[in-house]
Length: 62
Image 1 (cartoon, rainbow, N blue to C red):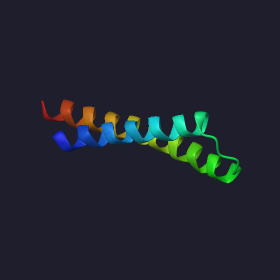
Image 2: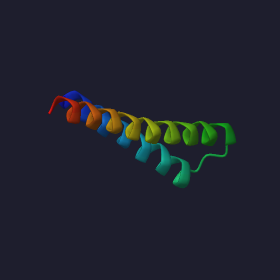
Image 3: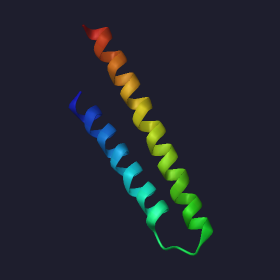
Protein backbone atom coordinates (compact mmCIF):
# COMPACT_ATOMS: atom_id res chain seq x y z
CA UNK A 1 0.00 0.00 0.00
CA UNK A 2 2.95 2.28 0.52
CA UNK A 3 3.83 2.34 -3.18
CA UNK A 4 0.33 3.50 -4.02
CA UNK A 5 0.73 6.53 -1.76
CA UNK A 6 4.11 7.25 -3.30
CA UNK A 7 2.63 7.10 -6.81
CA UNK A 8 -0.02 9.63 -5.77
CA UNK A 9 2.67 11.98 -4.52
CA UNK A 10 4.63 11.55 -7.75
CA UNK A 11 1.59 12.54 -9.81
CA UNK A 12 1.07 15.57 -7.60
CA UNK A 13 4.70 16.63 -8.01
CA UNK A 14 4.41 16.26 -11.80
CA UNK A 15 1.30 18.45 -11.68
CA UNK A 16 3.08 21.21 -9.74
CA UNK A 17 6.17 21.14 -11.96
CA UNK A 18 4.18 21.19 -15.20
CA UNK A 19 1.78 23.89 -14.02
CA UNK A 20 4.53 26.20 -12.74
CA UNK A 21 6.48 25.77 -15.96
CA UNK A 22 3.30 26.46 -17.92
CA UNK A 23 2.46 29.59 -15.94
CA UNK A 24 5.89 31.07 -15.29
CA UNK A 25 8.00 29.63 -18.08
CA UNK A 26 9.34 31.91 -20.77
CA UNK A 27 8.59 29.66 -23.73
CA UNK A 28 7.67 31.21 -27.03
CA UNK A 29 6.65 27.88 -28.50
CA UNK A 30 2.90 27.46 -27.99
CA UNK A 31 2.95 23.71 -28.68
CA UNK A 32 5.30 23.18 -25.69
CA UNK A 33 2.95 25.15 -23.46
CA UNK A 34 0.01 23.05 -24.67
CA UNK A 35 1.88 19.84 -23.88
CA UNK A 36 2.69 21.12 -20.39
CA UNK A 37 -0.96 21.96 -19.84
CA UNK A 38 -2.02 18.47 -20.95
CA UNK A 39 0.55 16.87 -18.61
CA UNK A 40 -0.65 19.01 -15.72
CA UNK A 41 -4.31 18.11 -16.27
CA UNK A 42 -3.59 14.40 -16.75
CA UNK A 43 -1.38 14.15 -13.69
CA UNK A 44 -3.98 15.90 -11.53
CA UNK A 45 -6.65 13.52 -12.84
CA UNK A 46 -4.41 10.52 -12.14
CA UNK A 47 -3.73 11.78 -8.62
CA UNK A 48 -7.43 11.89 -7.76
CA UNK A 49 -8.10 8.62 -9.61
CA UNK A 50 -5.38 6.75 -7.72
CA UNK A 51 -6.43 8.30 -4.41
CA UNK A 52 -10.05 7.30 -4.92
CA UNK A 53 -9.20 3.67 -5.65
CA UNK A 54 -6.62 3.43 -2.85
CA UNK A 55 -9.20 4.59 -0.33
CA UNK A 56 -11.78 2.25 -1.84
CA UNK A 57 -9.44 -0.73 -1.43
CA UNK A 58 -8.55 0.30 2.12
CA UNK A 59 -12.21 0.47 3.12
CA UNK A 60 -12.89 -2.89 1.51
CA UNK A 61 -10.08 -4.58 3.45
CA UNK A 62 -11.31 -3.34 6.83
